Amino acid sequence: MDHQNYIKKREGIGSLFHEISTEDLPLQKIDIEFNYELFYTGRQAFKFILDTISDTHTIGKIWMPSYYCQHVTRWVKKVYPNLYFYDINPFKFDQPINVNDFASENDVVLINNYWGLSDTINKTSKYPIIVEDHSHGWLTKNCMDSRADYCFASLRKSLPIALGGISWKPKGTIANNNNKYLIDKPFYEAFDKLHDAMKAKAQFKIGAFEIEKKDYLKVIDETEDFLDINHKIVKLRAQDHDLLHRYLYINFLAYKHSNLNIIYKNVMSVDFMKVIKKPDYTTFGLIILFKNKSLWSSLRSFLIDNDIYPSFLWPDNILSEDWQFVLNIHVDFRYNKQDMLYVSKSLNTWITQVKTTENRS
Ligand SMILES: Cc1ncc(COP(=O)(O)O)c(C=O)c1O
Image 1 (cartoon, rainbow, N blue to C red):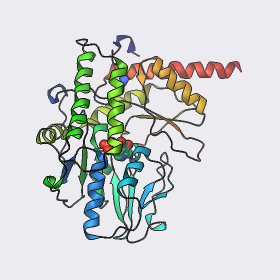
Image 2 (cartoon, protein in one colour; image 1 turned 120 degrees about the vertical axis):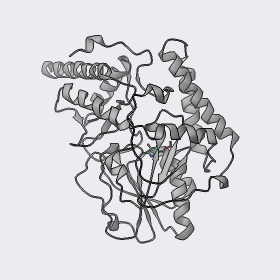
Image 3 (tube, rainbow, N blue to C red; image 1 turned 90 degrees about the vertical axis):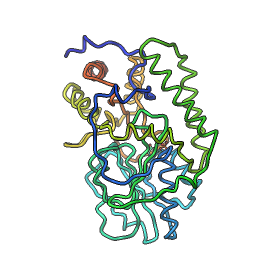
């Protein structure tokens, strides 16, 4: 393994994107063939869809997956309180979701594309109305060829932007009258603050600037808190619309695809850790699953000690499955082959330690 050439990243691996200009991304363009509308957040994009449906249809129940981002569930409940939940295992992809088993004609069902691996719905009846969330599968084939009634995604998970959301209706159009939305100064300030944090991270990365980690993390936490309490759709400023648009046609999935292949080739396979993947699909990140919470926690600490910051998608979800503790390691456009070899080597070091301890006991 040629990880010896790895140069440690000042900013570590993971956490918030730094600002990067489109010229610094080796251009891999993608066509987007559907008509879309842009928003500041995935939540606002979803609300826009629910508002659009409500214009012509009385919504009975809104069905959300039991395993989902709890911040978003709470937010949706504030704007549409008639939420119900259906059971799902987010790590198993062999069974279709039979929406007619629980939803009725007037209902809306939200289906999440888990980690980019969920199949798009095969609709067998006009109702219930299906909305798919492709936040973790942006640009995957199920996102691009969705057969749902409506789709949305949070774009800040894939594009180097402070905030962003997108809605579309596969094989149709949804009209957005941006002029009817709120002009919201505190919201714009929150966007600018986060954008400044991304710029500061870019400077820090090249050694031109020092940032206090705690100040920087505070900005991220404050923005999340702010998004939690802001329940209106905010009018996109022209400059922010342009910014989102500039990154929208870059194939961010292609970077993940080649990065993941390096890791898949190099990480040892063991029975106490499962890598979630599917042939011909590209996952959101390196998704690792454990049965044993102490192993999960041990790997998490080990990675952080080695400047790799995994995310946990998502806290507060409870699964009644053996394999339920998940870590996501970032493999996006920020990283190259050396970085991925470093991640592989770190994982192998931890695996070897666990195996040695197991053999001793
Ligand atoms: C799967 C999923 N959908 C939607 C959202 C909401 O996106 P945003 O934060 O842009 O509103 C999130 C997370 O925040 C998410 O994880």
